[in-house]
Image (cartoon, rainbow, N blue to C red; front, side, top):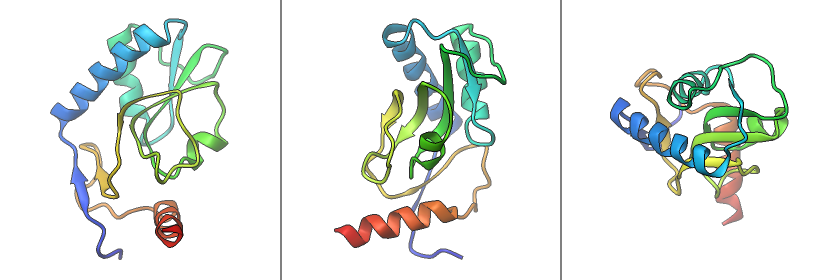
Length: 140
């Protein structure tokens, strides 16, 4: 069990606002996007929501103009090691991430563990979060 990590609980209302903001940015800054793929688990729900909002197909395969969506870019490992030219997230933590997504809804500068509405309220931080944050704090 992890102790002393504060949590920020995100509501569905906040998610709706982030999706609207992200969709508006995608329309303006990335009009060439033709399809959306969600990274399994965290990225599936935001990908479906963006697919509906933008009127773009949700696919399982990545082509040249596919947007790869995840919920958060915390350590950055998932997106850095994944495939896809274009990436989008709801939350980007630049101070802990080794990767910068193509586009994001919110830059999050806090160290809180973000709990999204589709997750268990008592979810624990995952291992890569712990390693990245301990490394980050040791560099300070």
